[in-house]
Length: 203
Image (tube, rainbow, N blue to C red):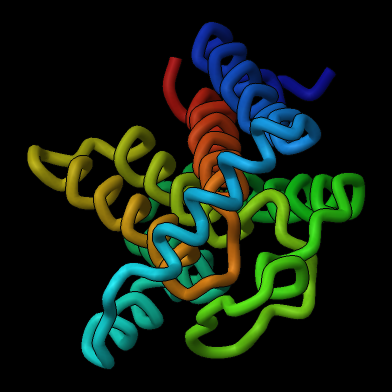
């Protein structure tokens, strides 16, 4: 077996895998009537909160921290730290998570809120793909974990990075493109998958 693909920290890898599986399992709650009702009620409550153009613009801007631009930024930062292993791990974490999220969306086949509910406020473009789990939230938490745990960062930068990841998750609700369980699942998957790949960096 190629030693390069054996986690240096087995405990961290197992914990990351468990958290990832937990994240994927949140969707089971939407198969139940109470879980689905809670998800929709919470989404509507957030979607009906008062807003203004400035807040809408801020949420639209923040949500891009969970897009492909975040992946490019993370790879650029990985290159700047001059750690070849960190570059490879970051690239693999982002690539494999994209595949994982794509498979999860294909299996769950959950429509977006604006395709199921009436009177929904959508800010910006309406994504054409499926809803569960939230890919933006997953990527934001994946990158946050790679940076905050994978790199030696001084206080308070890890909290700032995770705070931005949380803001990305909330922005998906504010923009009207995801249910709460979509975001919760994506964030949990991103955290777990990030930890799994960080295990390849440190013993």
